[in-house]
Structure formats: C-alpha cells, structure tokens
Image 1 (cartoon, rainbow, N blue to C red):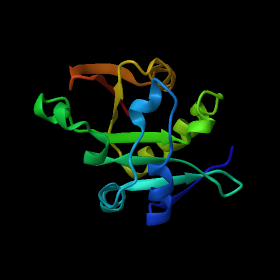
Image 2: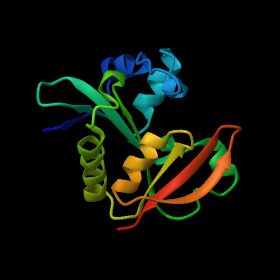
Image 3: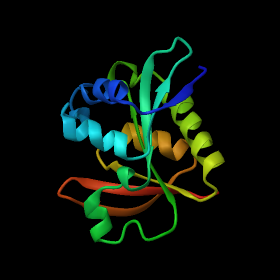
Length: 155
C-alpha cells in the first residue's frame, strides 16, 4: 500500500469529522463544527491518502495528540513526540493498520529525532496490539473517567 501525506485543509478536516465508527469505537466519533475544523487547521494535523488519491486517515502530533487530563497528572513530562492517528472507519479491522501506522511512525521519526508517545483508550485492545507489534510499550495509565494508557517507542 503506497501512502502519501498532505497538510490538513478544511475539506479534509470536514470529511474526517463526519466519520462514524461502530461500537465500541464510537468513542472516537467527532462532530462536524467550525470549532473542530479550526482545531484541525490550527494544530499539526496531516491527511493520509492511498495510491488512488482517497483520504484514508490522518495523524496529528504535539498537544493535539494528548488527552488534557493526562497533562494534569504528569503523563506527558518525558520529552517525546506525541502522535495521534485515525483511520477511515470502513478500513479498520481489515489488516491495514500495520502498513498505515508504520508509515506514520516512519514519517514522524524522520522529522523528529525523539522517542514517540501515543495515548490510547484502554478498551481499544485492537489498537494496543498494533502499537505493541510496532515496538510501543505501555507507560502510564490514567482515567478521565475513560481509562487511557500512554505508550512509548524509544529511538
């Protein structure tokens, strides 16, 4: 699967914000609003496309990838690049995650020469398995009341 990246724009953000995931992943559903579109434009968000030019996912880095409650409890003290990802709902669960996430990890590591960190809802065993497969290890657990874990990948 050949993937490419484009800087987030209003059209891409609007499409992504309308994606609807099935339970229990509906936790990741967003609402299309001017405020949410602006959030994606004001922070480092990037759209990911397949070789047919179809928008298949996105990633973000920095504060946009952190859960605010985690900041309150010190989950993000260590110097890392935080990453967040999302894949188009109809593509999840089809074995595409490894290629998709590997592409993101390689892209971010080429740009930033720091360890990587991500935050994932503890119920999302499918994502956690993928992250562990690519070398991430569990670090800190916290509740918002949703339970989250941070995972780290050293350089």
